[in-house]
Each structure stands twice: as structure tokens, then as C-alpha cells.
Image 1 (cartoon, rainbow, N blue to C red):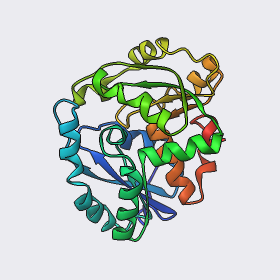
Image 2 (cartoon, rainbow, N blue to C red):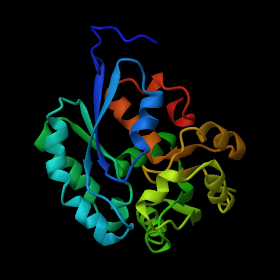
Image 3 (cartoon, rainbow, N blue to C red):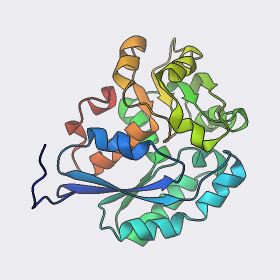
Length: 243
């Protein structure tokens, strides 16, 4: 494909991402399926070492500056691309922070949690199987969070990965190990959480195998961002959510 000399990137819409610095997954995944005329632009916040509550709270201190930086790019929607923050920060952190970010930037702001929440509502599902790569001590917070939001967690499992830099290295075989730990009987959706967990290449096959919708962090962020821009229906390769 030849790119014309007069190409205007993001002519139909620019999606701004605030990305933890360890994440080598979300930008390639979004670019791989992005409809023509849209673009993705990212700024990064410091995240390194082991995944611990202290590391996440340190990262969160950079979010307001990151919003200012990505807003300066002239984006049309901003996505805060970290799911684990949801389970570590105080209740309603996502809702109050996205409202603050939107007021500061003047554009719509979503997060990994608010995107997933809206996707679950769109599909009308309540009974869930949930897989994560998180350390066991952090994964233990996940079921209670969903139950506190009126979901039924029928099955859950984790890869128990401590080092942040190891999550983007999860391949299809290791993802399969995670899936084998989940019992999806009587579940209405299967959730694979973490924006640094590679999933896009597997979503259709997993849905075919298990017969229920699959929702992942990056998939739901893209769906919600494109919905904000009126173009979610143009992605046809990421499962039932987009159909």
C-alpha cells in the first residue's frame, strides 16, 4: 500500500491513549484493526517492575499531566488504558477521574473499566467467567469488584504474573492455559482483562469454541472509543461486541 503525500492521519477521528509504560500491546492491536481514516496517538505514564498496589498508585500520580499532554495532540476521545487501577484505587475512581479528565481536556474520556462496563450493558450479560494475568494477590480483588457491581462471577482464574514486562509476552499457548482453568458453563460472557494481554488474534476462535461473547480490555476500549466517534460498526473481526 502506498501512502499519498497529502495523507491526513486521523481525518475521521483521533483516539488518544494514556498507556502504562510497560505496555507493548495496545497500540499494535488497535492499529491492526483500526478503520481507515482513524488514528491512534499515545502518551505514556511510568509503570515498571512488579505489579503491586504501590506501583499502580505511583503511576496514577502521572495521569493529570498525561491528559494535558495527549489533549495537546488534538484528539477527539481519550482512553485511560489500564484495567488493574480499577481494583486497586478507591471505589468510583474511574467515574470521578474520567469526569475530571473530560473537564480538563474538553473531550470525552473513557477508561478500561468504563468501556468494559458499557460493553457488558450493551450485551446485557451478568454471569461472567473472568481471566487475568495479574499476581494472585491482585487477582483476588477482581471477583469482589464485579460482585459489588451486581455481576455474578461463576468462574475466575489468573496466570499469576508478577513482572509487568512479562504480560505482553503471553502467547497463544499460555493464553490457552488460562482459558482451560475457566468453567464457562452457565456464563453469558468470558472476560480477559489487562490492556497489556495480547488477545485480538484469538477473540473469534475463542467465541466459536465457547459459544459466548468474549470481552477483552483492548477490544472494549476500541469499541467504546469508536462508538463515541460513530464508527464501531466498521470493525468486523473482533467478535460479537462489534456485530
